[in-house]
Amino acid sequence: MAETSAPDLFDQARTAFDRALQRNFKGLEYFASSGPTLGASPKDLLIQRGTMNLYHYRPMSDEVYRVPLLLVMATTNRGYIFDMVPGQSLVEYLLRAGYDVFMLDWTPPRRDEKSLTLADYVLDFIPTAIARVQEETDEEEFSLVGYCFGGVLSILWAALHPEAPMKNLVCFTTPVDFSKMEMFQAWADKRFFDVDKLVDTFGNCPADYLYTAFDMLRPGARIAGNIRLLDNLWNDEFVKSFRMFDRWASDTLPLAGEYFRETTKKLMWDNRLYNDTMDVAGRPVDLSAITAPFLHVTAEHDHIVPSAASAPLIEKVGSTDKEQVTMKGGHVSLVAGGNAIKRLWPKLIDWLGERST
Image (tube, rainbow, N blue to C red; front, side, top):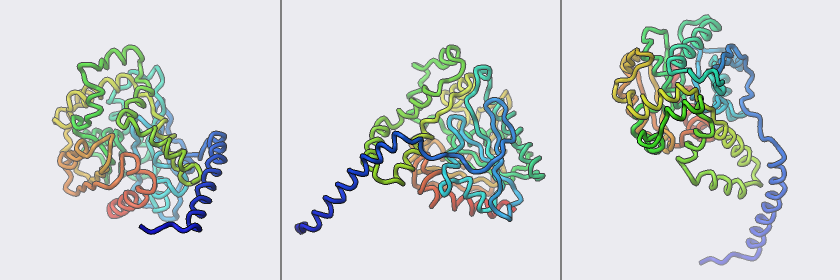
């Protein structure tokens, strides 16, 4: 075994001392500051109606693709996962590549919105947003990009509107076989979970309830993350990244009560989307009716929507031009952060670029 020389030991000790000193100073700075500003790309609010918000981002390129792009966020979280900070923003990346970007985002439903159902999202909010995108751009065609349950809402809308001029459909980590979401299945087991009592008691499903459910998927992750943070307080880039993702993960939204009741029963309990028995307001959903070019990206290490839950979607969609890609990363790192910058974002740009003229 090679021996470590005295100068090497001295350098190691000095590095350790410097980092310990920086951790102390940075620790004080961490608790005294509010962290980076997220979701700051310049945009205009086109629609604000209850829980629904439609944004139009201002262009960053002189030449813009003809076909606009509408991002549909999951109803459980804020849309700024697509727009973290400059240099780490999918929205910015798309704008610089020449896309005209809109986003359908959500705020906490008010108490008087507890009666919102799946039909309100699929048959009202999404088509209202699409109509405004068409009005703003003076283009009939558009591309739809849905993340997680935003992807579920997107495929439900697309299946029910096969005649719509949708140019492309893209989904990230979108579940279709809810029986394979094993931890959520245990959490929502109808033998123990009384969804009717929860909704009838609270009106809307509380955000804390959902946040705890997500946290239960990886019980030790928060403790491990805090330990890594403490160990890396000297590293400004690590701290910046930790604060961004920790804030987004903690910023869970409540869900409208009837919407939560319906999705729990139809999707988690009856698995209707996978069993081809799904309906929205009595209208049967046939995913094979979707014929637009389709891209579905899943994450290899997704602990929220495992690949087994999302993989069957590609076969159910009727498009002839369709592709499914599984990339390294987790549910969040697939779409944001260093992993996404290297993998998903270039793939999305290349795929859309061939189909957006």
